[in-house]
Length: 191
Image (cartoon, rainbow, N blue to C red; front, side, top):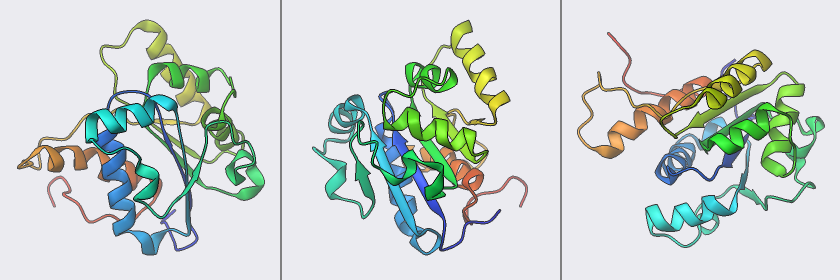
């Protein structure tokens, strides 16, 4: 289903390294502001730490026109299915967070929102950035896939011949946006 101006999206920033992926997603969402109505963002403590460490900015909440919610704010609209957020992206997604989501352990806003998305049969996209993977990680990914989630690892595409690290990482972000239903102009294989 293509994104429309009524598209309501949840973005959750997990604690894995990879804050640049989240930043590039935020920047791309600004470019596509005509395709969404509302973006709710929640984040872990480690997400804030990694943002500062990897990007060098103290606080992303000041830079973007999204609705930001603390990790224990269960009054956020997307803590309920009645708010009709259609898609949730968890980026970067640590294996610990992925495991909690896989087992329905709704102890914060991110895991509650993911649980809501799954129970409402909406689109949950997890972007893990950790490696290597052990059997527990893989089994949790299978469990989530069976529940309807999409596992989209932060593995860049090389066939577009990216010229720098940003172009390389944008191959992941554009794929995530494609999966979310946004109309994205990006490199397409053999087009």
